[in-house]
Length: 157
Image (cartoon, rainbow, N blue to C red; front, top):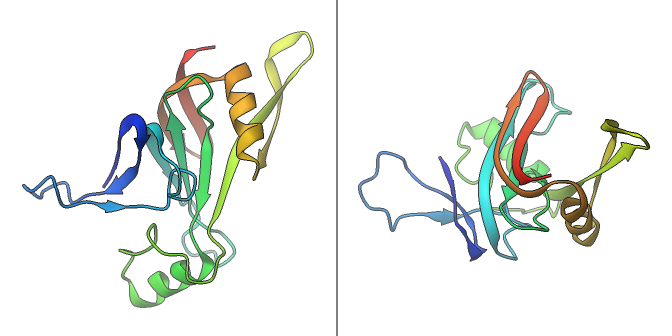
C-alpha cells in the first residue's frame, strides 16, 4: 500500500493498510528517486506482463504543484529479479543494488491547432518534466492505469 504526502518536501511511503500504528512506514524510491520531496498526490501501477522477463513494472506518480511533473519509476533490474526468484517483493521500491532503477518524466507536445492531439516522450530531465507540466498539466491529482492506458486528472489545464 503506497501513501503520498501532499506537502512541500513530502515523500511516498509504503505502509501496511491494516496496521494500527501510523508511524510505521517505509520511504520508497518514488518521488525523484526518493531524493527530493514534493506535494505528491497519487500513484498508479502498471504490470501488464508479469511473466515477460523484458517488462519492468512501472509506477506513475502525480504531484499537486504548478510545475509538478508526471513521474514514471521503474524498479532496479536486480531488485526485480530477486523479488521474482524469492517471491518477496518487499524491497522492490526501496533498493537499487545495481543502479538500474529509472525515473523519467512526461513531456507532451500538442499538435499545432488541435489541442486534443499530440505526441509524448519520457525524459530523464526533471527540468524538462517540470517545464512541460507547468505548460500543459499543472496540479495533477488522481491517476490510474487501465488496459495499458494512463489516465490522470489535473486541476489546471
